[in-house]
Amino acid sequence: MKNSRMTLQDIADLAGLNKMTVSRYLRDPNQVSQRSRTLIARIMEENNYIPNRAPEILLNARSKTFGVLIPSFRNLIFADVLAGIESVTSAHQYQTLIANYEYDPEREEREVLNLLSYNIDGLILTGKQHTERMMQYLRASGIPVAELMDLSENPMDIQVGFDNEKAAFEMTQAFIDSGKRNIAYFGSMDDPRDISRFRGTQAALAPHGLSAWHLAPKSISSITLGRQMFLQLMRDRPQTNAIFCTNDDLAVGVLLECQAQQRNIPKDIAIAGFHGLEIGRARLQKIASVVTPRYEMGKVAAELLLMRLGGKDTPESVNLGYQIYYGDTL
Image (cartoon, rainbow, N blue to C red; front, side, top):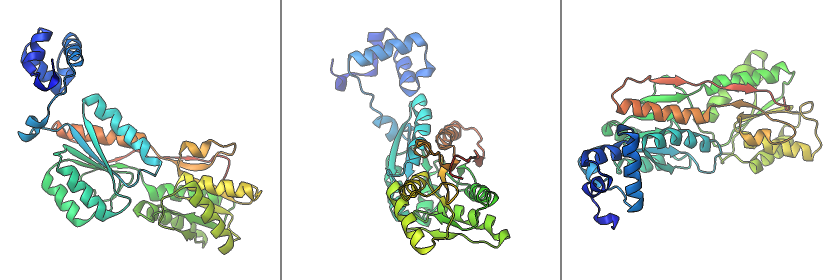
């Protein structure tokens, strides 16, 4: 039997169940018994049946879809965020529509409007720098929205993250405690999270009468970019003896160039990154880093959206914290 002609009643008849049981299964398999789940799944598989969600969507029922906006597919940190989101959505038969906006608020606005046209049930954003027009779209939509990766005093709706400024303050303090005074801060896109971390760095240095040398090329972070920034730094500020990078891939680039120049790490130059990526611990010298709970952020955000859709109260802000990893480079 071709799936394009198969109805819920057909599935029910073949499975020896009633149509309502099949309908409940398609909305949420956990609503029916294990025996019914097994029977319906087998009948659907044998007949290549693909559920048609369009009638539900046209009736303003839920699409069982979340939209997700990330700033770049090239930034390694968001793979863990997406995995955390998917761990929840897949368990609840939800789908995700994922778009990226290359750190461009105007493009983010267009992508959000596009996602809203698919009648998404909720939206997960990985930044807090939005156009006013985009905010108006979201307020008019009435759907729950979760912002990840940072915390602010006035969240749009739900926020799940950690304090970037405080984390940078603590890592910079570790540089100071180790005797480093000539510190550079390597940003990348100079986005709000970059800027928050630089503020934390400056706040730690200020009581000592110090200031960090700030480089922010407005480019996606990468190992190659880290090497290039280090070479520029050594030309402009050869006295630098500590470098704090906004991402671990930059820090790996710095470490590789230091090793190529046979510099003693951390005696000559201490290095720290951010996010605790696996790439930073894959070498003999493990890079110091702020370890962030990226998987957990995605997971908690998806859980909170489902709670909100289920009519439950949710916290406005969830601080998941971070850990300072001292590694071998500090």
